[in-house]
Length: 296
Image (cartoon, rainbow, N blue to C red; front, top):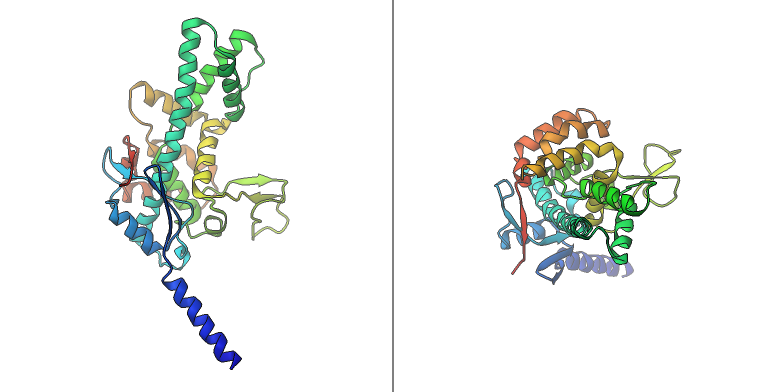
């Protein structure tokens, strides 16, 4: 009798889970997907006309997944699945870029005041110091010289990151989201933290003194990677290339920076994987001034 009851109870749970609705929240012109299957995500994209990502100056709906679909690891690897992965990440990267543009606009406004009046307010000075700390900008100078240096360096460091390279590196580092890090830690770029107990322990090294950082959601992971590109000394070349692109009013193209990015990883044949992924999925087109639009 007990065995029959547990069989019935298990079947009921399976039935409920099989027909569970996706967990969505709509606010401020965006849909936040907190839990959904791959099929449900694809259907949501279709409902809002989000099918393609490889045309110039496209607009994409504000559909933000907090994590990969619940059944992502169970879905066979196909070209269509890879395209869903790209569509999952692209709005999130563009959202992070919107925040970066807002940060840059704040610094540009302070810079305009400083150039015009030769001084800035106490509130602006506080904001400037906060951004300097965030983006690892340092100078021993003080007074007006300090303000000038901080403004110059921050205007070099704060800016958009190419969606193409954010997507292609996430795809390669996580095997298109199939890795343990992507599913359990929302980690797309193998970000490490050292000498701390927090984080996901590497399975292939019992004595490792590092852990993989766990992120609350995919957006936080992408924002953290963008901060690395915008602040770490290893990416000076990236920021210089972006500055040159800005001077001629064109975006920095990820594929042009990929050769340098390859030096960041010891993954086998990463050069070939990056080049193939860029070319096959025409990801370079995602760098041509893409925009987000509110969902109806």
